[in-house]
Image (cartoon, rainbow, N blue to C red):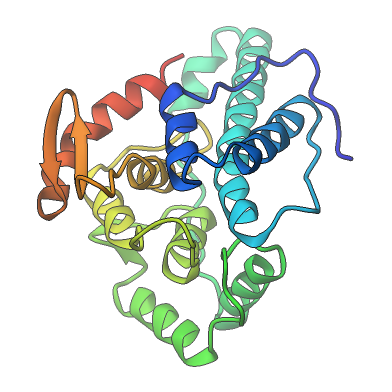
Length: 249
């Protein structure tokens, strides 16, 4: 349905991804196969299924974002290599250029972003749009915090869009909201951004939530178990591992 991406490397789904999917679906092989096959088609040519039930659709959306991010990262790397090759010695100087100054959104732009995410099914299993009071409350909080999240200045629109997703998205298969993790990552791990300057808090948080073991009520990171109450310690140990796995060139 969308532009084919033949020739690009296939973004991997790790063994832990398949195990998580199987556990969430209670090892229902028919439903597991339907979701994995949909992800395979999306990886191959961008096909988005239109016949998945709501819970599978929510899970598909999570992995769809991961696959799309992998493609974007690869394409950006190719683009950067091409630019650097053309510029030669100017490439180093280009890296020292100051980033574009962040311009905060208006309340209308903020509302429009929420509407866009809702209309495009990026807010998970919500039956209704977030109410205007909640939207305005989040906008006011960011404005009163001088457009900072946990002390780190917002740099690009993606940063506050990510917070909208974390605040208002509802998922049927995660036992908790990932917003605390996103805010913690955003505020503590300054510089955790990709080549386009996008914070990676959303990606880390998403994967961290997926690695949560509901039966044990915690995480096993680097061979050590952390109960849910010690999520900050688990996350501090998890992030370097995530960076090595996802951001290594």
